Image (cartoon, rainbow, N blue to C red; front, side):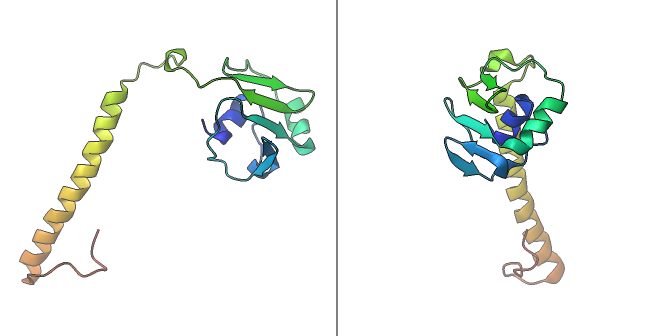
Amino acid sequence: MRLDNILFRLGMRSNIPWYTLINGRIVDISSYRCKPQDKKRSKALIQNNIASTPHEEVPKHLTIASVDNKGQINQIIDSKWIRLKINEILVIEYYSRQTRLRKNNKERFRQLWCKVTGIRRELPHVVQI
């Protein structure tokens, strides 16, 4: 679970990542991967933001202590909690197909380049995709 998503779910919407302590360490990467039992603490700057935004329901996998500006991940989110019907296999197949298509397009471009220029060698470094 990404840090920026967790902060959004805890109601710290406009949080700046370097104002976040995770397990006692300052984290400045918004794509930081959090694990269950990680503890986050937001500094005083965020306290005003939390007070000014309306609180939505906190998801089951997170807990928040507004007094201490702390949040905790209780568990990894279960895909059954998400109300979207997503077939993960189809998503994986789609992206693996896109990778194969890119490789095939590169080969077709190389063949066309050789045909047009009459040069039977590899593409120049600048033209390679």
